Image 1 (spheres, rainbow, N blue to C red):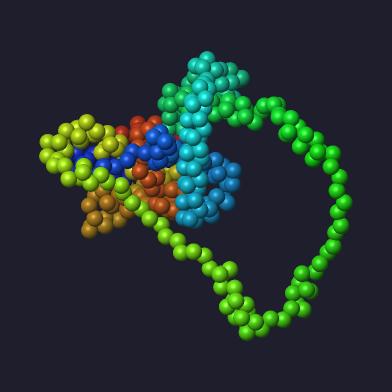
Image 2 (image 1 turned 180 degrees about the vertical axis):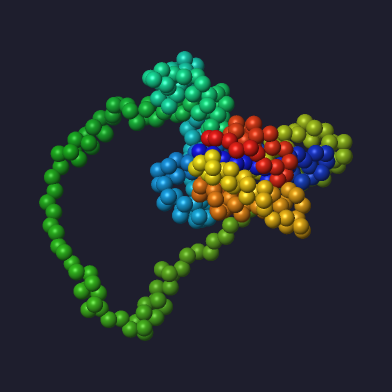
Amino acid sequence: MLKIIFVIIIVSFILTGVSGYLIGGSNNYAAKVNGQEISRAQFENAFNNERNRMQQQLGDRYSELAANEGYMKSLRQQVLNRLIDEALLDQYSRELKLGISDEQVKQAIFATPAFQVDGKFDNNRYNAIVNQMGMTADQYAQALRNQLTTQQLINGVAGTDFMLKGETDELAALVSQQRVVREAVIDVNALAAKQQVTDQEVSSYYDQNKARFMTPEQFRVSYIKLDAATMQAPVSDADIQAYYDQHVDQFTQPERIRYSIIQTKTEDDAKAVLDALNKGEDFATLDAGEREIYRFATLAKEKSTDIISARNGGDMGWLEESATVPELKNAGLKEKGQISDIWRD
């Protein structure tokens, strides 16, 4: 499979100085669970993995789901909920002092069929697959450790054979019980056809039972709790700058780059797309970078075999370095509208 990639835009979001403090900063996490952060990169990796899994499972049918904005939003929420559940289980496991040794993690990696060649663990294959997942070897090992620890907790709860005497008696009573059942079949449609209710009767019943058709008034409130005494304390520019310098990580986020791709099945198809890009219209009202972006997006919608990015003109969205595959990092793209060479996936 061949792909042509180019960078739409490169932006580094770094808020500096007093203005960053006054703006309030920007979070580098998708959620925080009891103080434990779920990073944006971790969430995007999990979402992309789930999306790829569904695409492989459903094939062409997945394109219909991917075109449904509401469904994709729901899918993102499901992935985030799963990460939150995993974080809670991880926290509870640590509270119980459960743990997995380095040797157990190593053996689990060695035993994974996907990392094996001819039935034996292959380190090059392991690193290649982990990189495709947007993770380093250390990050994958830690994620696997968390997964094994959580499984240890689940096995300890669900896999136990211990039962209280009361539970044993209740189970025995359920297994040995006998019941006599009588059955009657009623044709609901025929019964409903015989019923006649006038508008007056409906109105009268409603007037007599209004409370059954009403719910108490509800409202949603968002609030911020502030200490009045603290708010009145004078704060100098030097104090603000000092606080910012001590907490600069709260007001910055990693550089994110926006890529677009065109994926083709053959090298000839890729060369044809590249020729079309080079022979495109001038679009004199646009600058050079914008012209390349416009041409690329048009061809991506027409030619790309990646059904998800194609409908967005090849746009893959904003990617942090940790979520970017090595091929994109090695493409050497630095300028807006720059196009990479053809590379094989």
